[in-house]
Length: 173
Image 1 (tube, one colour):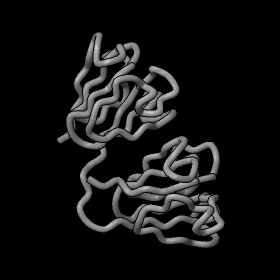
Image 2 (image 1 turned 90 degrees about the vertical axis):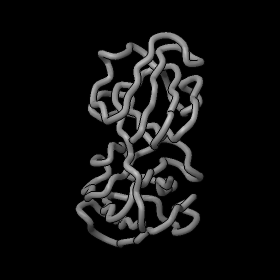
Image 3 (image 1 turned 120 degrees about the vertical axis):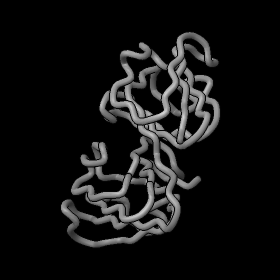
């Protein structure tokens, strides 16, 4: 079970709202979000309702202002708890949409796809085990995309506007 608390103002001030499960629309609970306290669990928070827009991965800890979670503004409109995963991790990435072209298998983190494989265009993906995050840039920087178990036929299926992925990390507890 996870728990996080959203605060309208910086440094955990102002109106607050506690959340213990996925919420597709937080708009009715607060108008802005300037700080977050993650009491337990791993979470992905989203800039727009229904798990859309910029995504930010948060683990247990305190985020006194939105810049601490690399946010662009004070707008958080949905959140998703990331279940604990025990066991192995496995993901297949493809160079073309609909699982076409060259296939690469991942079972561990990769800080730089291009440095390691001279390749950083991912057009489709099959997450077979575990929860992962795609990062737009190497060394786990830039836009983040939660990759839950399942099939992603094209990069827009995971919310990206481009096929470029700079790094990949497993979500471990």
